Image 1 (cartoon, rainbow, N blue to C red):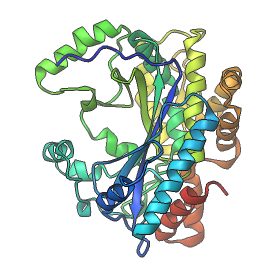
Image 2 (cartoon, rainbow, N blue to C red; image 1 turned 45 degrees about the horizontal axis):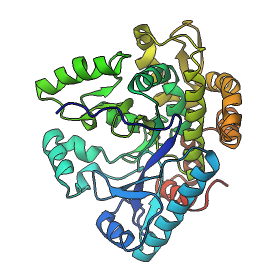
Image 3 (cartoon, rainbow, N blue to C red; image 1 turned 120 degrees about the horizontal axis):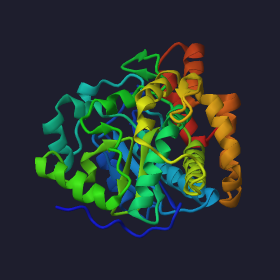
Image 4 (cartoon, helix red, strand yellow; image 1 turned 60 degrees about the vertical axis):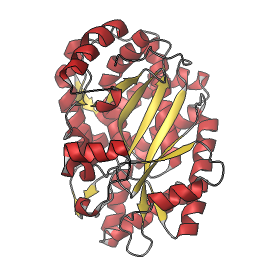
Length: 375
């Protein structure tokens, strides 16, 4: 089946998706509560939308289409409050974070849905290991060509979003020494990583996708697990590298940083994207996952190295006029605090573990942070 025509959407419009953890309030392990929670939520109108995910201990929420930081954050808080109230009724808890720190993948139950069951049969144990939690951000694009231009222009900034959102240092009961261990699980899937370097939507459809479809490997864009992928049915690109933050405030800030960055890139004052930009892509991506804001990244155009923290702070100065025009300076301020002072949520979780010396305390803190916001 050919790809649908690239849909009409307003440039720089936003949609945010968050995968969230369902937690047992007694032992703080994951709990298979998705069916009960979704049934309860279906009885009343829900702000945004809520859907099942791969396993029964996950759900995914999505906002409506937004254009400004304040309404986006307001909707995310309304979704959060609705979820918390429903979970309280069911005696379960809900949390952010890119991984649950001590769940065992073998104990997870695949959600009963044809696509998830098909993926479980195809990928075996990887499907249950995919009980990890990410934030996806959709950005509206005027055309398919603009979408591919943005997708490849953003490749240089992917380490920013990995490092800023990183909240998965603990997995299977141990500190992985990665700020984002979640992305290691994603990278295990075929057709993950980067998209092919094509800047024409017509060429992408006729040449690349048609050939891939003919192999029988893919049937739709859903079969690609790229870090950034086009979504023609929405008229967007979708950034997929972020861990789910511990707070909706951080989630909204990351989305609006991306929006301001896209606004800047669409001015086309930066060097045009090129295939050679990807020479350092995997290295930069690894550094962000492993070391977070303290990782090293190489500028693919100048070949200069600096810390990811330094590169974020320099980029914030360039995108500030765009953030001001988009009414998102509050979001940019939060990103700056994260990069310059407070650190990411992986750093916060390590501080909690240093104080408590137990992994259950990490889940308690994740539940608290989502419920009440930043301290």
